[in-house]
Image 1 (cartoon, rainbow, N blue to C red):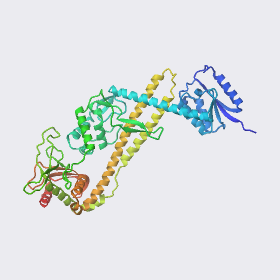
Image 2: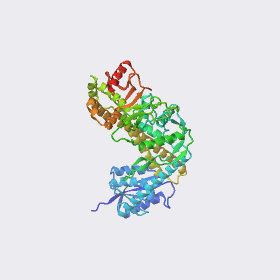
Image 3: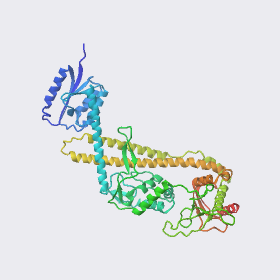
Image 4: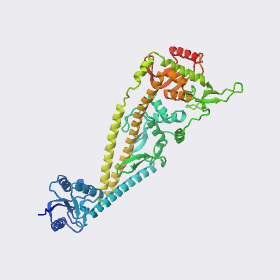
Length: 557
């Protein structure tokens, strides 16, 4: 005996009156007759009365039917509905519910529309609905982005957290007095010194500046990535940029997106107060472009200016660079010097340091000081203990995990808002107001996603920087253990590479001291053991150290 197919009947009306010429009872009657004609057993009937159908969460009977299908309660093979619009007004809801049913072996028949999802024509219908749902989402995205760009044109802040240096008051950017000094220092040092991104970040970290902890940042130190973001953001000159970062779909995916930074984007006059002048912002951009393509000029292929950029001018604080004096007619010998090529200091005052320091003398003096350090009886033991030790990035790893959790939560909120917009009833009398509210909230999520991803980039940058410093530090420490043997046999370019990796800066006296010494202080890139203590700075002004320097200076001559 042939087993009869079982089905559910589902009906819905927005009000108690008839729909499409059929009352609720008339719909049920037609569905029952269809089931009888097809020799189906109606296992249960579900009916939502007085619901608009704008989303399935509001239809309790529909939800109960789906739960019964998932539990296999009656072993049904079909759900009968009068028309597809009665099953779900929105394509996304139709697809999601239909896919769920088919996962449990249940298909949909729309009696009035003649659609059966178990047949090839029904499968085609599913594909078409998928495309329609995608178009709806893209339309919403386009409308949202258009709204964001219009706000930018009007000079208004586009949502999300305020950039560092500002705070939000009623949605407007207002200068944050407890943060603004850092922004001004970043521009001042980047424009008026030879420092790059990392050097500016190190200056802030080494001079007592701590990043204010706020909702969109829990890292108290400054990174080169933070400095870069500040320098590249036209908001600080009173402008509003649109599209600096664009959320784009990942190739090969349907619903995965990532943030892509754009080289070109429109900039509009903002309604907020500027922190720096447009002139300074343009100067910063010019230097950013120069540094991106900076290449060292080599006038002599066999000579490297070993301490170029490390030595600092005692007058203006800027770096000293290599200078070449052509061969003299008497001895036909080319001479190399370090000199300050700047005419104006960071304060705007004229730089008066016009001394050419003979390179060979300075190079030997610095090498002699390092040699004296590494030959200390305690130095070798302390260095060996430092090599291979692990770095502590636990706090940063926790911050990264917390940001990843925030990103997942925000993406979840964005997805839920998408569904709400997808399921909005266009006949709702408050449709326009509700869709605008949803778009505003949806827009805020994109701003939040950008904020979180920027923070994640900064944390990753700090973790990478710490690990890279550890690796670089170990390499330097290995070289220090064999400094006298290795350094003397190295080429000038290898010596320069070592000095650049080991020493951050060397501060000089305004004039050579009576004992022949130029060096006032050395700042290292990595902590080194000196006299039983780990130091990053070696001041050469104390009596004991000064005597050593005098001795080394005599050896160097």
